[in-house]
Image (cartoon, rainbow, N blue to C red; front, side):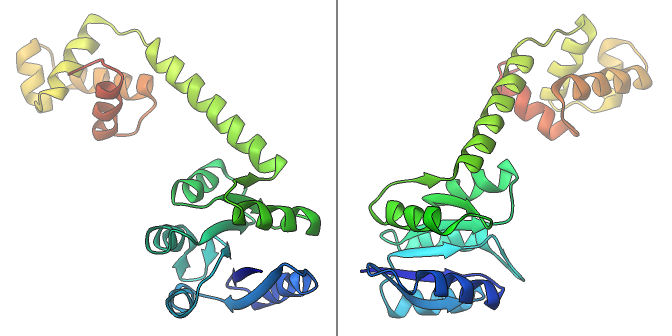
Length: 213
């Protein structure tokens, strides 16, 4: 018997899931929780095989709760079920320990298939979720390719190296014998080329891809 815990801040949703699962001979819904505290208390008192977990739990974060369950109850499998279709949310849930991810418009048969799959130690994403993940990976690879192909002017290279050394705008201007405004222009060009919004991110990406040491 698969012991299932339903976690969503909308009680009507957990009640609907409970109704769907009620007639399955190999599945037993052992609890319905609306927040992280309820989940932690229940997990401490009884063994749970699969947690159906939403990302949005009102004041609580399903992302954080996913990580908590994964770290403290390794044998408990987590199946995310959410309305969020953004690749960033999906990736974070999977990174935090979820074995699967479903959208809330998933049908009954796929829900049952997913529960049984993660219970048996597998991973499960619906076709739509898999497509979102693949598009995200493709976009990431394209961004990485673009970064590897970056070209800089001599001055931009010099400014990037001085930024990496921690020099201020005035100090860079003095070293390069140019105006502070020109330094700022080169820095803005570097931010645009690396597609980042601040110097911290600029340095992180530049170091990661070997443009500075």
